[in-house]
Length: 464
Image (tube, rainbow, N blue to C red; front, side, top):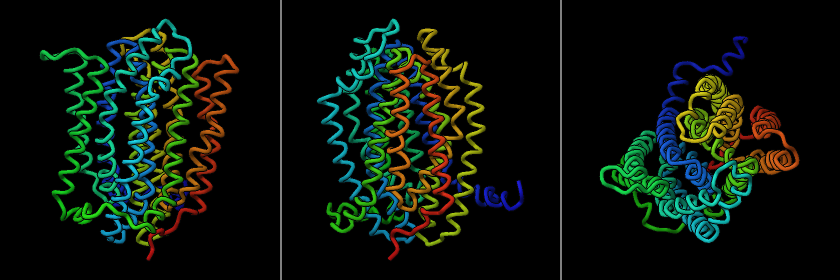
C-alpha cells in the first residue's frame, strides 16, 4: 500500500479516538442487548424446537415493524444531525415532534395488522416440511408469544424517538446505560418466568415475552427521565411538548426526505422476511437452524452496525457544518476501518461456528444446519460491513431516493427472485441458496463503491 493510499484510508490516533467515542457505546449497548437476546434464545431453545421456531417467526415479523419505525424516524434524523451541527435547537424540537407522530401512526398500524392477521402471517412460515417437528405446536407458541409482545410496542416507540434524537445530537452513553439496565431486567425475568423459579409459574415462551416487554418499559423510563432531567445537556427538550404541531412546510420537508427511507425500510424488512420464508420451504429444521445462526450473528454484527451509526452521526454533523472535504476524508477512513474490523470478527465467528449450536436442546439436523449458516454469515460479513457503511454514507447526505434504490429495490428485484426461484425450482441445499443470495449482493457492492467515490452525497440539506 502506498503512503498516499494509506493516508486516504488510515487515520491518526485522534481520528480513531473520535470514531470509537461514538461507535463503542453503541457497540456495547447493542452487544449487550444482542447477547441477552442470545441467552433469551438459548433459554427458549432449551424448552424445545417448536417453541424456538414459533418465537423466531414472530421476531421476524416484528422486525418488519421495528425497521419501519427506524425508517420512519430516519428521514427526520438526517435533519436532526445537521441541525445539531448548526446548534439549531428549535429545528431539533421540530424533528422530535415529527418523529412522535410518525412513530405513533406506524405503531397503531402494526398493532392493528398483527392483531387481525398475526396467525395467518405465522402460518406462512410453517408451510414446508415438519422434519419431525410439530407445526401446529409451533403455530400455537408463536401466537402466544405475539399476543404479549404487542403490549411492548408503545415502549419501543418511545425509546426509538428519544434514543435516535440523543444519538444524532452526540449523546451515545446514556442510551447505552439504559440498554444495559433493560437487558439485565430482561435476563433476570427470563430465568424466573421461562423456567418458573422462586415460586413463579413456568410460562415458557409467554414468560420470555413478558420479560422483554417489562425490560422495554424500564429502558423507556430511564431514557425519558434522564433526557428531561438534564436540560442543560439537551436544551432542545425544553418546551418540546409545549405544542404538538409541526409546521406544514417542515413536516412536508421531513416527509419528502424521509418517505423513501420509510418505504425502503418497510420493503427491505419485508424482503428479509420473504427470504426467510423462502428458506423455510425446506422444513422446520431450517427455521430453527437459521434462528440459532442469526442469534450469534447478531452479537457479532454489532461492529459494523455501530460503524454505520458512526457514519450517520459524524458525517451528518460535518455536512451540516459545511465541511465537505473533511466529510469525504473521514468517510473513507470509517468505511475502511469498518471492513478491516469485520475481517477479524468474521474469523472469530468462524471459529465459534461448530461449538455454539451444541448449547441448544434440539436435533442434530438442526445443529448441522445452524453450523452451515454461521460459517456462511462469517464469510460474507466484511461484504455486509461495506454495504452498511455505504448505505449510511449516502443517507447522511440526504440521498434517500438513491438509498431506496440501493437497498429495498435491489432486495425485491434481485435477492428475493434468486431465493424464490432456487427454493422452489431446484433441490439444491438451503445453504447454497443462502450463498447465492449473498453473492448477488456483489452487484450492490459495486454500485455502492461508485456512488460513494463520486461524492453524490456531499451536500448540506439544512443550509439557511
